Length: 385
Image 1 (cartoon, rainbow, N blue to C red):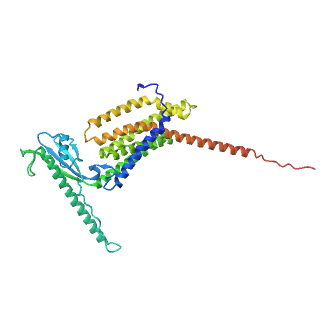
Image 2: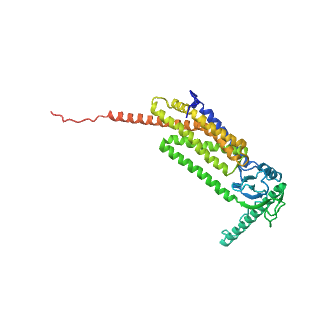
Image 3: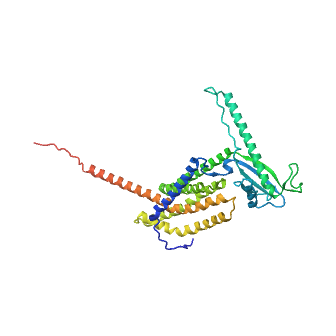
């Protein structure tokens, strides 16, 4: 790659503390937002979870004579109180659209297990309580689907008449659309997806830690993994502060950030390792600055192109990709400076601490050897008279 930006000489290690201070402020603001929303009377959840995690209703609608634009459908849904719904076009059918309706307030019912008068409930009582709870949840799910379908139908009626249940959309000449499918998404499935995403992220970080520790050094590995944690937490802090919706696409963006963030760290670590062999007498502080400046041209070109692409997604991607593009937008910025302000300083700080410890240990061993060498053995000779 051609160096478009040459003669860069910035004391990056000198400004690491202000950059770390900015990160701490953002993380603290995200923590206050998450905790405060749950503790305040009548507050909301820490994160604005989408239909994929909270549960809701998925409705498939088929149109005749051309599908309306997503903005028009969204505007109709907002008029009936479904402004938080997700509109997704069908991949293989251009005349169909999927509408994900969140849980409606007052329709999600949970039951408490019936209390028993005895200290140890019998198995029959437990079975009866479980059956009653399952029936209540099933009834709540049916009610949720019917309410969601009713509101979606009311919104879609603004575009024309719905086809009769006994007729297909092509047969009913006066019909404009028809709801061809309804499905209920339970919060249990969403919780499983969330747990699997967290496990996948942690396993990815463990793999990164082991690879860098094997390929470079464990101090570099720790710095890279801490920087990745930093990028993910900063992104989540923005999502809780601005209450951006978190869906499966946002989790995909967070997994993408894991690889994006560690990429820059690997490039700088590799340059540091090369300079360590070429400039053995150069202080580690100065050597790290030189390594960051030498790779800065590559960082500006590659990350700049990524930033412009993500910015285009934010501006023109629409509501379907809004969470995904916002997560990548925040992550692209934090992932760029975390390599400079988080990963490299932590790796260098630990190397300095290890170097001082080794120097003290070596000095202590030398003192022990000198003390033992001063003890000379005395050989007794017989005295002849």
